[in-house]
Amino acid sequence: MQFSDGADARRAIHWEDAVQTDGSTTRPPRAANPTLLYARPGIVVTAERFTVGRASWPVAELTQIWTTRGPHDRLAVRAVGVSGGLIGAVGVLLGFTGGLQRLTASAYLALGAVGLLPVLLVLIGDRWRPPAYELWGRHKGTEVLLFSSDDERQFGQVTRALRRAREGVRLGGWQDPLASTAAWRPNR
Image: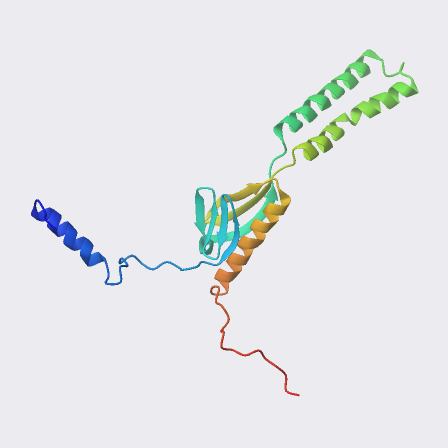
């Protein structure tokens, strides 16, 4: 190797010192095959890390894991509020004008049916756009939203995988059973 100045030579020697005879560098060894508990595009749960998108947390640093439902759809909440307000305003207006005394029985039934409109809007809104499932936890003392999904099945799988990873950390790691150990059989 030819170098133009002494600094390049020192850099080259330093690089050569960092490479071992077998071609590996002096970087710390990584786990060859981390135990993979769940993997889908954008979500990976291993025995050591929980990764969602670009956010990643060491499983050992996550504490107090809990699940909850997110807020209701804003459009459904507004529709319920507006319809409830309008029904209340019509009722107050009829009460002040004395119109409630002149109504027939069928008109009272119609008002009762219209009074159920906000309840129907709530049910339809929750079916149409259900609140998201949220997985929360503490990371270094701070509450963090770890994962959110409106797919109940995927949410359950991710939650179970993270709980299994935490259990593995709590019990001392994921060790494979000894291959040389024979199965236990009772004496007969």
